[in-house]
Image 1: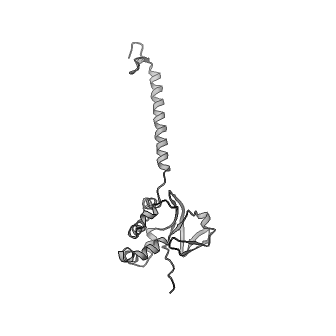
Image 2: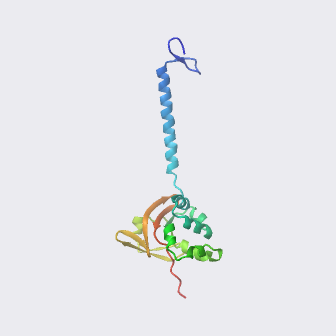
Image 3: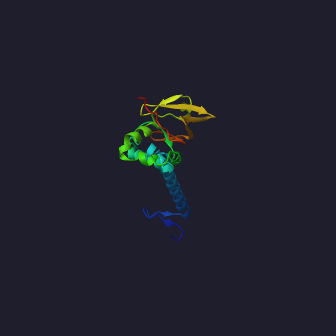
Length: 186
């Protein structure tokens, strides 16, 4: 500090008054804060894919395990777009005792794939569009019955409890029961 109360600039050796220094520090702090907010909002705006979104929600552990056992997790992490009708852990718990455990066995992989692909429709179908449909064709080529009851979307015997969870590669609609594909008549 000089006799006049000025602080020399370390690079230019030019005396700076304390008020100029405070102003520069405030400007720098504002600029850094703005940069941090911009980076933070850019990161927050990045959407996760369907699988990562479901896993992060915490209520789809059974679905995530089933997707892994069926070898479908990578597919649903792909480009899509997909519409997934995602049963919660509670929905899987409604199945008869032992059903999930049995389906997760390697010898039942084909049946598990059939059930899981019955929960996926190609393309991104938001709830507004879905409510106008009477059927949708699942990835396993089987029809899902869609119906609006009391203002809520129902698929076969299942109800959509939360709709339009946007993901980087499609949309998730949470359902309260596992969809079981129709059996083929012989």
